[in-house]
Length: 432
Image 1 (cartoon, rainbow, N blue to C red):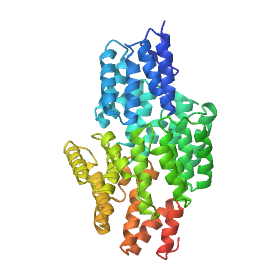
Image 2: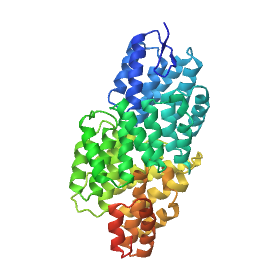
Image 3: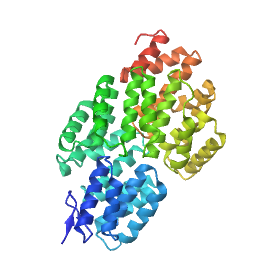
Image 4: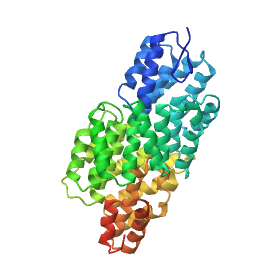
């Protein structure tokens, strides 16, 4: 008896139970739902020789920032895939390459693969993520083009709608992103990917009240063990910060981010939230930076520069010179191996972060201002990387460089009239 996934692709397992568990894992991974790891583990238990089930475990571990587990799982998948279909062998080989830190080569393998197997959804999903972290100057537009050209292959599929919706909000097509995300949620109400898109649309359109109402309600039914619970909580905390309620944002950090089951996102989201307290000059007591620095030491891995810039926030905030030196040495080694932005963009951000945390605002600007306009290349969304623009504004204001601050703020306000930027522009006596 042959079995296939819900996209019609054959699965090399004699066990109907293993195939069912694998499909469950696929849907949970594609929707950022809880239990994907358990579903893939159940598929392996039902058929230990099922290569794609091991590959699924690798994908989940990679998302969690657990590189060691991902490598073990994907190498097991590679061994078992030798006797499977060409589609499955190529699927596994692309993941082996990405898990091994060769994102550009892995992306090339996926792009070639989906010409023949466009409905290999887990690989398409991974490709979109890899593009986002590729360092390309045109990464947002490139990702939209990559996903868009597969539209006829997926039709009204709930996962594809949310994948395309994510790309659309990245390039400012907010109405289309919301429409597709709402369509996706009608089909699959548990799709955290779609709810995530709506949070971004609310953020970029400065609908803070709408974002709070939507996310607070949606999170009530979202499993706290799900891998994206932390990140959606971070979005909720950002809405609270933008609304001038830092105490509520800090409470969300303590409740939903600090102890998240996804340590990589806890580190990234936690540092990106706490750093804003200083940049925005919110009065607080000591902030829990040590915990985030410990997480950074656990989850950073070579080649994941988006993680590196957030690790730098934690290390700089506790003054850990040894960790900063090791981070910089790792980035220099990455540059020597040909990474496209390790030296050109990432190292200046790291060094600017360290200078800012030490109170050297002029030194911070010496590093940050030359890469203004290139920061988006580190990966993540606008809501994530704009933190470094905001750090520049804070430095300029503290140094009395009001004309420079006003120019940057006017540019930002033309894109998104945030309450924080409006307050800052008011401080320098400039019309918004």
